[in-house]
Length: 228
Image (tube, rainbow, N blue to C red; front, side, top):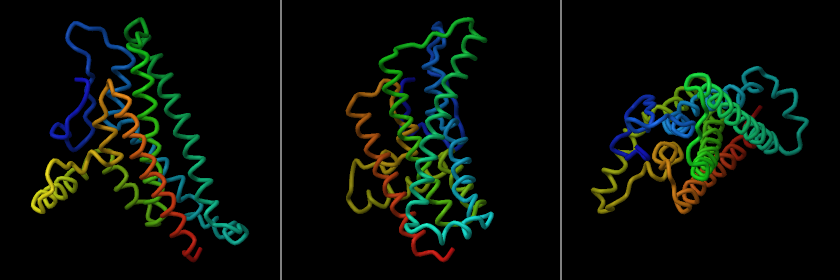
């Protein structure tokens, strides 16, 4: 299994190793299984929600909000910290995965390194895009429980139900061969092939960048007008 089709996406975390019978499990196989299922993303979005609203829920924002000339910089600083956190977390996960691979199987066979870095790099950008979306949801809603619920729903494919309804409405309107989930960050994380073409990576990065930028700009706009 080198890719997952839209019809095979199930609600929940479904970690399936793509190793064929008789072949040895590689680090690439393990990474693909955990990233495609959004198991790794789950830890990222939980931290994103807690971190993004920490100063708001604790009341600390009142101490610094009035001293900052441009409130948007507070949002940008959060986005930068989340970028560093996402990068370090994914790197740490990769190291731990390689160590566990060696401990269990006695060797760390990586697989096709060119495809591995192409896939891992694209997924890293997609994961960061998802983190920015969850940051926006958390700050705009100002409700940790609701924000956490929505963020987890993004990771366990609950919103595929909503996407299917949108697809049905569009089909009824005469729009054919359109799949809404293929144009979302969470959908791209799950549907990206294990052996993506350059065009697939560019498309995925474009979607992650577009949604991530929109999330940051919308958060800045709301935060500027909010009474803190």
